[in-house]
Structures are given as C-alpha cells and as structure tokens.
Image 1 (cartoon, rainbow, N blue to C red):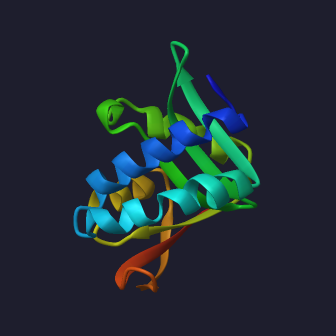
Image 2: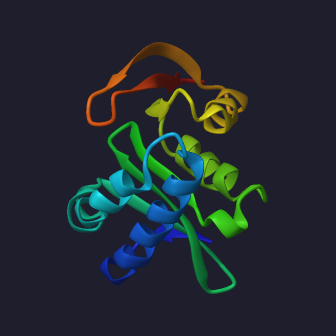
Length: 142
C-alpha cells in the first residue's frame, strides 16, 4: 500500500535513506551520508510537500519525497531492492503528476538506467556542490 507518511515514521525513513545511500553511492564516503542524517530526518523529509511510504505486510519498506513536480528522494530498503518496489512508488508519483524532474548522481548507473526505463530523459549533467560529484538532471513528461 502507498500512503502518506506519518511523522512517527520519519526516523525509520531516514534509516532507509542512510542504508540505501551508502549502498548505492559507494563512490562517496559513508561519513558524508552519516553527517547528513540529521538534516534528512529533521528538515528534508518533514519539509517535503509529499512524503509517500510503501508499506508491505504492515512494514514500511520504502518512500518517495516530492516537492511540487521534483522528486527529491526515492529509496527502498536495501534488503528489499530489485523486487519492483521502487517502480511501484514511481508509478504512483507518475500517475499523480503531469511532469516530474529529479537529480541523480551520474555514477549511480543503476539509478540512471532505472529512470530511463521509466521514460525519464536526460536534460543536463552538472556538478552537485556538496559532494563535487556529477549529477544528472532528468525529466519525465508523458
């Protein structure tokens, strides 16, 4: 089931974000993600216009955070990736928005490929200032 998150779930969502970020972005030191955990839990997730969770058998296993038409975050518990859960969250977001944009680290080839399969197009590649890594801006519009 996909539903709005409740405030009590934010620590769990931040934990999913941390574990999934370390796994997907092994080219960025783990200390970077750990240093940003508090901001994610106390600012970024609570301040999202839309914070959706994917709940399976009573357990929250992933989430999507959106601000307007921009997907700020899409993360699934690393233990449960590759089962279509991210696709379910994206299908929900795409069904409720006429256009979506997102930024993804260019070296996260798996994520770039995932979004391309969903119909996102590359708009530009640029430098993400806090990490110095290249990021790809992508847009989906049916």
